Amino acid sequence: MTRIAAPFALTAATALLLTACGGGGSGSVSVAAPTTTGAVTQQCAALQKALPQTLMGLARRDTSPGSPNTAAWGDPAVTLRCGAAMPSVLDPHSKDYNPEGDNLSGAEVGGVCWASVHDQADNSFTFSSVDLQAIVEIHVPSAYSGRQAPLSELAGAVAKASPLDGDRKFSCA
Image (cartoon, rainbow, N blue to C red; front, side, top):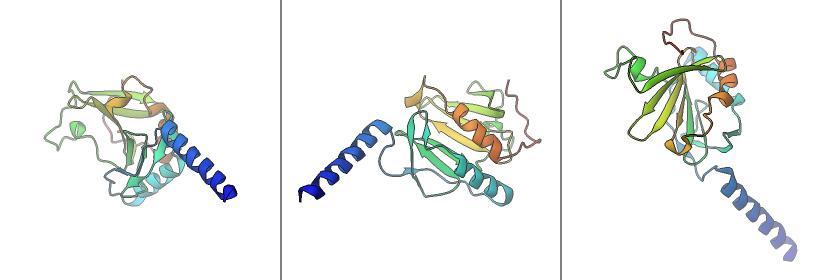
């Protein structure tokens, strides 16, 4: 019995240590999966294969429902949605349309134009790759304020997965 108990204890201790240090959290993260078709579905599948197991030092987590269009890291979770809609502040058909708003800014990181929307209610940020065919949305909770944003770690994979969409009109400057 000692031979069975020792490996089990070591496995349990290792799992506990990885959970405590990895920032992975327990259970799956609820992320609304965008519905995609055609080329965007293929682009999101390619992105899913290229996503890292860790992001900003946070361990990857399962999403619920499971989808090739979603990913999550850490607890609280940084989430990714591939095939998302244009941010409402940039959609002329939205009641929230306000491309000059104070909570909107843009930056080019890793060859991708990212629109950043700051949610002042919970101090979180949502970044959207507005110049690609498959819009990738990354939500960063306020718990990570002041830490490295995930854009530099994800931009290469995002840019390779989806080609530029020449119809997007947003200044990343």
